[in-house]
Length: 445
Ligand code: ASP
Image 1: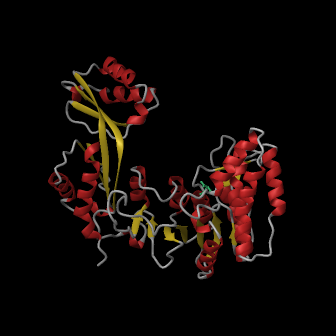
Image 2: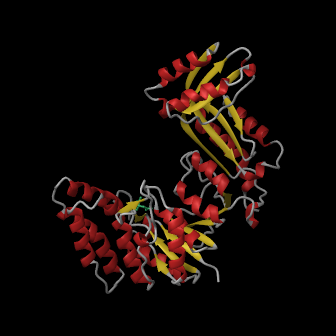
Image 3: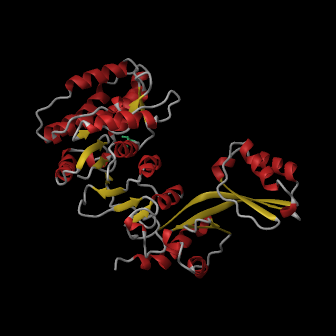
């Protein structure tokens, strides 16, 4: 029998109505055996996420301020869910322990983790599944990094003894048994870790959108959904700003070759987006050329020219060493025979720009060096580009027809990604032009 691990985000578990939808989804498929909940999220726009309430409340407790009223609001969120689901269940004992721990300054991570912990207890009760505390099965190292090996060993042997379980997301335990959380949105990571440990066939990540879209809906009206995307493509697109899933959630399942299905709790009939391991999955083959388009503003370029640069052994290394000395990562490195262009994030040069440029001049003595801080990057990503001829020409023609000048071009040798640089003021126009050129190819036929 297949095994699915299902993770539900905060908006999917924000109130009793959402709990009912979640339970219906789980009961609809007996292979949905292991459930990872987030803390209750926003019920309406302007509402608070319980995690934010917990952080705030704890900060007041740690300053010695009174937290009665704030803690009351947090308890109210859970008590409303329990009451509306008509559960014969009380969290009063847990509330008292947690409040006491806040007053004894048990730590910010502990405070935030209680959002998932309490929601997990309610969901386990509602589903009739056993509750498995993440603190006993998810482990961190002394330095705060995730201990994948220990977690996988303990968690997989535990899951072998449990047909079903609710495992709260977002946290685990340090070697000294204190609680540590992942970064915000980290329940996605827990879901991925559980999927790997359970040797699941599928990791379903239930949220409030029906998967990934071909482009940012704030720029493109009603963009097409992406049905299948590879981990590799997803990484390229998320790097450029597309986000639905926590970036670190990819690694555990990618390592194990388990696909992720992004689904919508409010529209369970939609197939969502399948994220599949590169090349091994049956849906890997595609007729679509471009899977998605993403981009970001806020880049800058440092361009160096030097006669006979290409003969000077070590020139590039010396330039890059200057960035390394300042702990700066470069983004792209397009170069010509006697020119080298380093593309960087504006943010990384803040406060050190003049120093970096001076050091480069002293180190490699270029004939000219120029700086331009008005660059936006657009990445056109698709595994279908590998075999297709003329894709780059379609991108460039579309952008030229929209009267946008391309300042930089970079195509990785994987052939799955063409990155172009344009002036920030032309960013949206370029995105729309490229989307219009390729979106018809992706119409469901
Ligand atoms: N509740 C946590 C947050 O709001 C973790 C999560 O929802 O994934 O960041």
